[in-house]
Image (cartoon, rainbow, N blue to C red; front, side, top):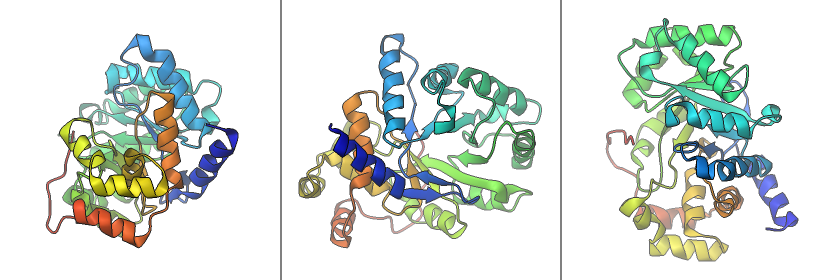
Length: 296
């Protein structure tokens, strides 16, 4: 890819932004790291992929203590060494580490593996048995200590968000990370509108589906192919651009190959027409009733 095209991608990334409740603006496309750091043979390639993503404007990097039992965080730490100020760094805590007796240590361990003194965002990975008020208290304490700048949740459905919102300091939550892609649109019915109403963007994990028949169903669809041909891009870029169409969703696709990083970043340059979106809705319709929250 030539420098002119790279500059176009970076410019699109800078314009295609999502605003957090505290006014922080982030590019709609970030980088996921699920399964990264687990295979030493591709470690250098994974580090270079994350660094290329940063150069293309995808400055949010998402990881978790669960991923590779900390190996993903170690990988990210190596990738951002010497350029921490370029990164909006996100990690996630296990539910069983989210009590007041464990959350501080869990966070400190993540910081050590990442080689930093703070996280830009710390998420509860999914809801467990620890009471929400206790986890919130722990998050607020970490924020007061400067170890995290913000906190949020992951895999919370609308009823969970309502409970969180009505718990002391629950309104300090800045995002909810959930599964969202063309083949999994359940949140379009209630969760995404609820969060939009409460000025809280969604983070979409696995925005291209996670392989298998569902991913093929999306990427092999004739309408998706037709729209891709219209914009001279790949079907996966149409699917990714669709997830960030509203400027209220941050998508975090994972990529290891350089060409995949470039393709993901280029998705930010695609601007759909109403006709495009209507055609996509015809083959991947918005739900007409409440759906259980998809989790993988």
